[in-house]
Length: 149
Image (cartoon, rainbow, N blue to C red):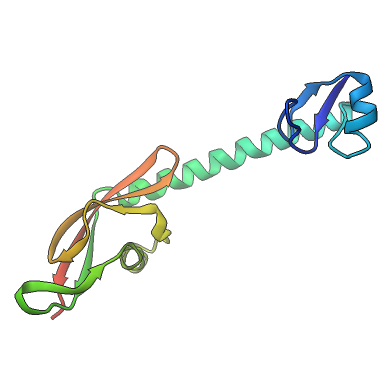
């Protein structure tokens, strides 16, 4: 009997999959515990709509990420910081600060966890940073730290 799984079932499949299960297993175990429902026309239609919705969401997110990547690629994010003796910074510049400056300069909201910087920023200069926007879509920016004047 063909059933659509409503939850992950060990050794049978993941939620939302269409699988074959024996009649007894489906009627005596899967249906009473609301782990699956019979694969009738309505269930198949819901399954197809869910798959189409997921594909559309992925396509939209990919397009948005690519748009942001095109906008940020090769740009320089300027950050002003206070310095102590010998040109060393007080503390360091973090990915949170880089995220805030990207938002201020380019009007793009980037989560600080998506920013990876090559080295710790503890002195003035230019540093390379990668922004992981979506699976396989990465924007490369330069972070330039200058003295606050």
